[in-house]
Image (cartoon, rainbow, N blue to C red; front, side, top):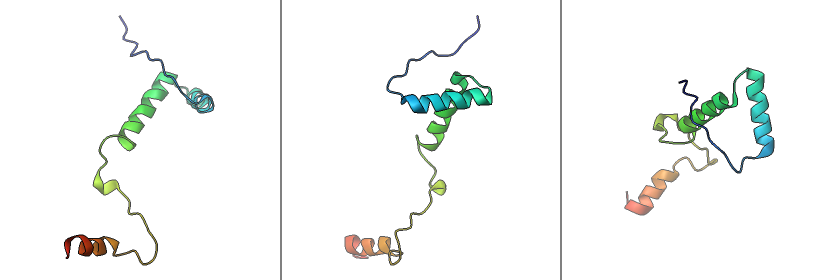
Length: 79
């Protein structure tokens, strides 16, 4: 027997987002199941799980904040 994968029911999906998602899947010639699987894999690697430290980008806090972490260390640890 052919394994058709897992069947799911999803609640609380934004209708406009779903319509756009479905249209994009159709445009690319893939099923909703394949598109959803790809979206879940992307979510898992980009938004979920542990991110590698090397992928993190520094956050610019503005001029004059270049040494904030060192100043915090001095305050907290007396270094």
